[in-house]
Length: 157
Image (cartoon, rainbow, N blue to C red; front, side, top):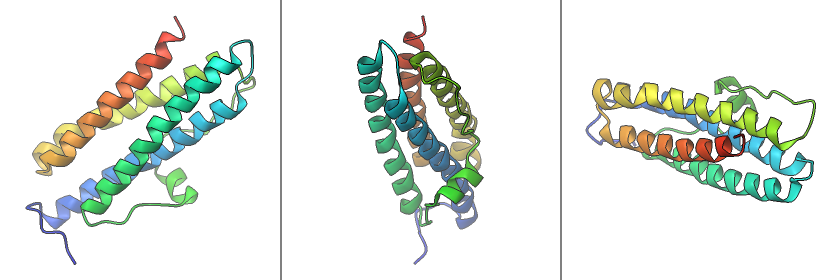
């Protein structure tokens, strides 16, 4: 059954495509944060192990809300690793060392990249595609990523 929520079907399809890319980015970021949690080494291991766990838990919630937003618009979510890797603009860059600073710098770059992508789509979704709800949702994601990026950045100074 088609979604009838006052937004043109063509626009809903475009919004779902934007959100599919967001979902892919979030899932890849979740995986990279999990990698940091599992593999961090050094004298700050315990604190950073817990810190990365808090971050991936928060991203896991975001992943679920993005997927649910796509479904609420009447579209199916990408849900395979192959799909996510094809849609994401993040890389699976591997570090030579498993130190906390390296992981933090890499994750910070990814959060900032996601923030920029989200910000580029806020007005497009609200104004051009006529979906204030998804635009507001995206704004909330920006705020979540800005806070996580701040937490990462604070470890580097």
